[in-house]
Amino acid sequence: MFLQRMIDFTKRTGKKTEGFTLVELLIVVAIIAILAAIAIPQFSKYRLRAYKSALDSDAKNMYTAAQAYLTDSPAATISAAMLKTGGYNASTGVTVTSSNMTLSAGHINIKTTAGALADNNTIIYFNGRMVYANNP
Image 1 (cartoon, one colour):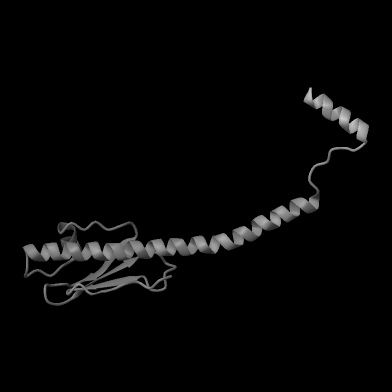
Image 2 (image 1 turned 180 degrees about the vertical axis):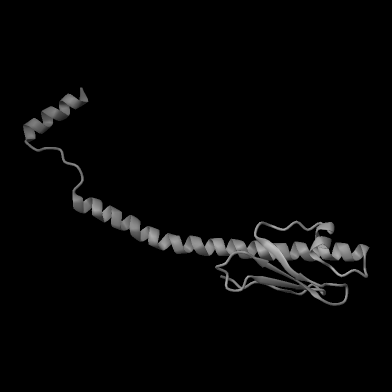
């Protein structure tokens, strides 16, 4: 019934119903392209911040595990294997690059595989001081 009314209306007015013009479609595509050009770099920055947050979180967890291990074995020097004994489980993409922490000296150096981070190392010193990775 509705379709019949539309056909009758177009016959009376003499106008055809038209779709979108090419110019209108090009304007819509251009607007979508501009929005995508704005959003994609922001998404990349959010990913890098997430990598940095995971690295910093792992640094704190690693220090806690090192202190837990050193509480049980005060004369030990912490290695990557000993950190697992202390309760540390690495996040995906985070690795221990060097470790020589004792109760009174040394540090643990960890790194993430996020290649776009300019400075992707975090260093944890025996006294709890941490040098975090730089913000992306």
